[in-house]
Image 1 (tube, rainbow, N blue to C red):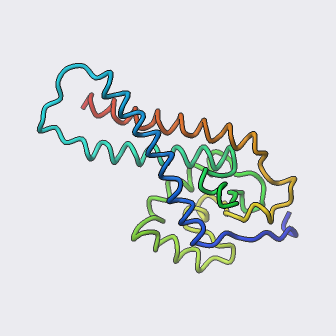
Image 2: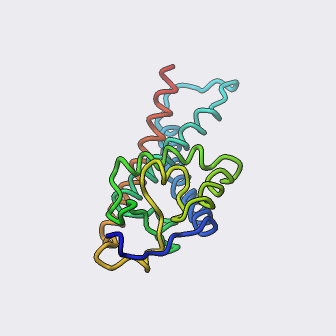
Length: 181
């Protein structure tokens, strides 16, 4: 598949797609938080500050959302809206392990408002951020992929709903663990 020429997505469009992706993650986390609050028993002490737990919950939800949606469906909601797709370096569909790796590495790529990822992409001929290099993935313009290599819309929709559910569950699990410790 090396002879197939595809167009790599640049930093700007990937940055905007990532911003769009915060909306579904916030909705999934907010829904989990609302449900947890509604079913919580007993009063919560006023001095209890859950902001760190909520931040960790959103981090876990974000990683789960991106890992699942981009590996199973080829794109998160933001990426799909902007015509992007995540593929392996050889243009095959990314695996779940690759999705995990690139999502976990975003913690590093996102430092200084994405400057770390931007610098990595600038040095890469196929515009890979650190997470893409680690996972051996790339983000391309979907229209430049041959139709046979594009993920079907039905799989994307399935993965998106699954990713939102998994993100909500991850957020809820962090909240639950915090009550135990």
